[in-house]
Image (cartoon, rainbow, N blue to C red; front, side, top):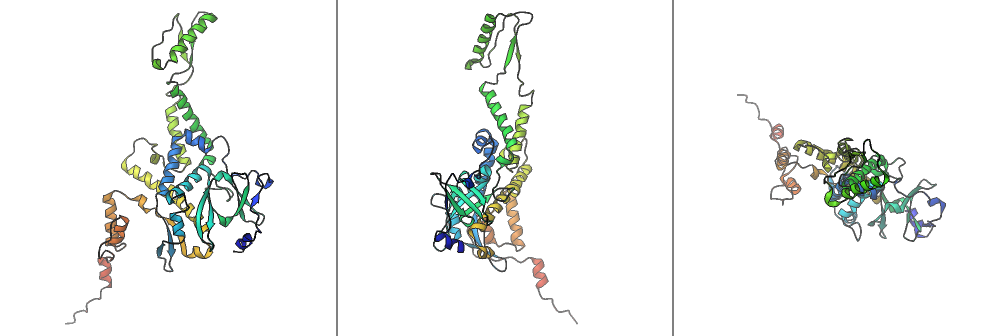
Length: 401
């Protein structure tokens, strides 16, 4: 609160010149030639991983809860819940959460400016592009954020004014994206994809030389033979035509075929490595051979447990740290509802609901709400198992006659 009062009276410097040495070299940008745009342009598996993670987590309900003393939770519909439903004037909750996931995968960091009202409550969350933000630790130990605008000026924000979701990090200040940490793997996969495109654009024609055994070919004949062969080979309607070589000439390829260097197998392995780099099970993005129902369901479960659940926890903790104060964090929390992703087929699902109702763990109306069905009269009553009812019932007095 003291910081905010000082800021209101102008004691906090908020703008720096772009030529200030302190702002050099701190931008959050991937290094090397493996940039986000290059990866997305040349790697279909990377596109699928980024899209699947972003759309999956964005489709999950994100709610604001209050925790009671006995551990129960109550969903809150006002205050921060309204901001989560409508983060700003131009984005929905789906688009906002989707952007968080995409920025984490492509840049390793997500930044959003936290706008507050006169009471200090969060009013809006405005996303910032990661390449325009640099993160530093001041001499006091506090984290500050420098955001460059279109004019080249740098505005300084304090840690409570920026919601920062960072991917895995080595210094705790700046996160690293899969593109940065696995740039060698992605570079190899991109090179293989470009090679495949080049080969396909050449109608899969191999390069080679024309040899004439035991004969010396004059320069004029050599050029005529080469031009004739090249002209026929480059004709779009003659990609698979028959070439006739005269005078004992022989065509010898000088490049390996896809079978010789196991190119197709190498591309499949590179696709699996790309999926691993983004933390996605390969079968979920279609990189698989023969998949049974059980293995497909297991891959989906692994995708939820290993990929989506940690991503949800990362975003939840960042929101609670920035959007809630110490007192509020004792009572309130935000949470993605992940349970719906693990629904089985109807038979398995309803067998689970039946067990939950018969054991008294859930009421019929709770199950109906999860299945998007209207509540019914008397559906809020919990069944009491027979074993429990028998143990608590009074025992009859023994017969003394």
